[in-house]
Image (cartoon, rainbow, N blue to C red):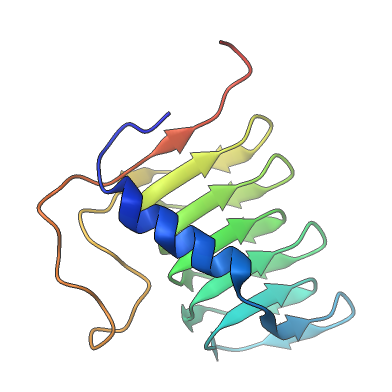
Length: 150
């Protein structure tokens, strides 16, 4: 159920993210300490101790853990994050645990996801560098929440 407008643009971003091949893979045996930036689509199966300051499409798998802040265009979370998230689109899957502030134009939360912190609806696209960011829209952000009840 969409609570705010701007859904078409967010749907296009999600379709693009799903169709794109993973260009970076952080294996479950990897532990990385430091700041990360990336382009394209990345999947984290291991542990990141540090911030992800810029990226396009990020998947944090069930085995993945981030201790730090995340700023990407889209964030698909199955794992655990202890830090703030800024993204145009955030999907909190049923296996995820997010401890920190979430700022997103679109937020989808599956039943079973654990979120402990503040949620803020962003008025513009975030997660993109200024030269790649689109002009702010006058429409409101979109938030989607799935539930077990009809």
